[in-house]
Image 1 (tube, rainbow, N blue to C red):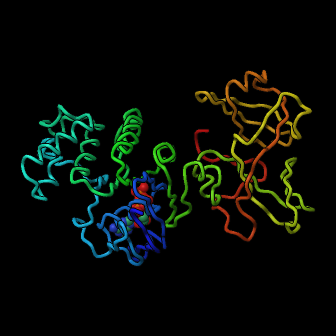
Image 2: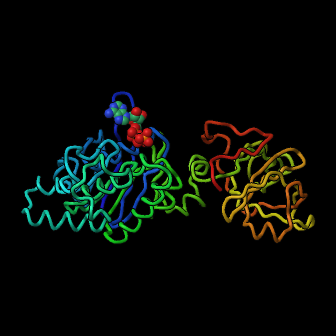
Length: 366
Ligand code: ATP
């Protein structure tokens, strides 16, 4: 195990930035810390780096408790949002900086910097100054600088936050390839769920200082631990239902709820992909009108309007859509293959309450 946090809290005066968080990162993992702004991600990263002292709890790096170990001695490389390159130094000198501090021999410094510049596709840029680089190149130099002293752990805070969408995509792919080659345990902070899903082996999701879930991208998407996670990752239909005689109902939709007390309210969630649609009206239990079709690459998102006015989101491949011979306004049958109970009355519900008229759909994408 590379890094372990045990019951870590951090208070800034009256603000609890991190609340009793525990998780561990395996050797060679590429881990994302994901969550909305103010969730505590940067504070966690800064505590691992040694730039911030936990109010309580312990941090271990490779089995050693590092609470009292200085930043320099932790052998951790980091790139923080505000850690810009040294403007008055060339790319070469920026990358060499940590090695010079550690008093590496001149020749070793040159070999190491050249090795890194080649690995990062920056061979010809050694003599340039930061203002002569593109945003993407600057980020790569910053990461090269962080890796120069061969740290056992690399920490990146919103590494691609400052570059445009296309470069961002390139850098993501580049980071995955780099990680394959170097296999350095890497933790990066992002508030972009797509980035976390695409790049990392596992994701830790934070909200308001609390760890909401830790898991693989697939786990957090398919088995969200709670409504916050379900809504934060991808698109989900959320319905609020009431239980009558063992059945949870909202308008025409019914879900089995055996043993649930009469009158209890439930919130259930299902992903658009869990809705199966057929042009054969006899095939599935529910009926709806197909409204609005959005083409998203190979996938297609549709809205289903039920006779009661309730709308839900579904998705399918273009082939399925073509195969079914569907078009906007078509009358179809559908079923919900898979759903999760997100909250029961008496358990904490999410801040916004679902209206009983519409399924509430959260998030972007498909
Ligand atoms: P973002 O995505 O916006 O960077 P984050 O998830 O990284 O957010 P943090 O920067 O860790 O969140 O902040 C968590 C909370 O702690 C916030 O409420 C923030 O205002 C507060 N906080 C962070 N650093 C300090 C500080 N030095 N002094 C006081 N409060 C702080």
